[in-house]
Figure 1 (cartoon, protein in one colour):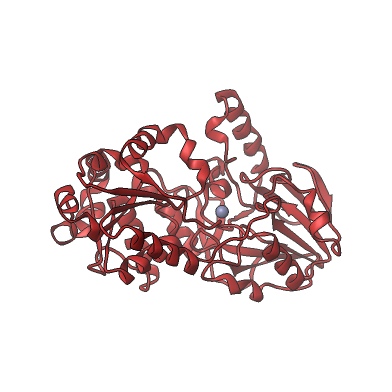
Figure 2: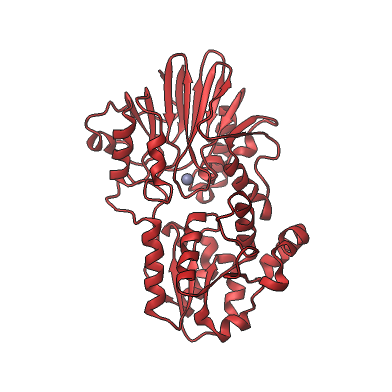
Length: 415
Ligand SMILES: [Zn+2]
C-alpha cells in the first residue's frame, strides 16, 4: 500500500491524501487551499489542474468533514465518483445549495454510519465521529494489506463532544494527525466557557444591543450563544440564511434550536440576501421560516435593543445601517483571519464607525498542543505523520516518544 499526502504536509487547509492498494485508489479529502482566493488566476488554474490529476481513476473519496479546505475541489471529481461521509456531513454540504450549489450533486453519495466498517476492493473503512467546529466531523480508519491507517481529520477535545476521542481505534500503524495549532502556545476555552463569556459581556452593558459575528455553520457556537441569550432572557436574532441552516440541522437533531421551534429565535430580513433567497426558492427558503410569526424588523430592534442579540455577517450590513440604537457592541466569535478579508470591507467600516468593539469571544476548532498529546497517548500509533500543519518540525519536540514520519507534498510512501 502507498500513502501520498498530495497537499497538507506543510500547509493548513487544502488537504488531500491518497491511499493506493493493489486493488484500489482512494482519496481522503479534496480541499481548497485557504489562501486560494488570494492567489493569481494562473496559480488558481495550476492548483485545479494538479488536483484534476490526483483524482484520475479514483475508486472512492472519503470526506472527514464539511469545511471547504477539505472539500472545496469536489467540482473536479469525475461524475458519479462514490463519495463517503457521515449523513450529518452530507446535510452540511447540501447547505451550500441555499445560496450556491450543493457540491455533491454530480457525485454518488454514500452516507456512512459511525463505527460501522465499509468494504471497498479489499479496503475496510470506518468513520469515528469526533469533535470539531464542523457538524458531523469524523476521523477515518483505513485497513488493508495488514496495515491500519488512522486519519484524524480536523479534531479538538475542548468542544461539546470532546470525549469522543476515547472511542478512536488504538495501536494503529500510522496516525495522520492534524497540527493546526502545533506552533501556537494557546489554551482553548470550552464552549461552556464561551457561553459564560457571552453572559458576562451581556451583563456588562445591560442596555446595549449586542452583535455577534460567527459562522452560520458553526452549530455548536450558535448553540452556546443561544444558551447565553436564554439565560439572560434575550432573543437571538438571525438572518434567513442562518435560519435555513438551523432549520436543516434541527431536523437531524431536534435538540438544536431553530426559528420555527423556539420563540427565542427571530429572523431579520436584510434586503439583498432576502431577494437572493426569494429568487432561488421563495417557498423553501423564506415561507418555510414562517415570517408572519418569526420576522423581526429594524424598528422593533431599535425600540428595545437591550432585548436582542443579533448574529451578523458581512452581507447584512444594509440592514444594520437602518438600526438606531444608543449603544451597539460588536463581538467576533470567528477565526480572526476573516476580519481582513477584502469582502468584509464595507461591514468592517460600518462596525468601526458605529460599534464598540469588544475582545473576541472565540475558541479554536482545532486541538491545542496538550490535546494533541492526549490523542497520541490514547491511540499509541506505531508512526505519527504530521498533516494540516505549517510547522511539521514541531512534532518531534512535542512527541519525543513517537516515531514521526514527516513527508513532503506528493511524496509517495510505501507503508
Ligand atoms: Zn475543518
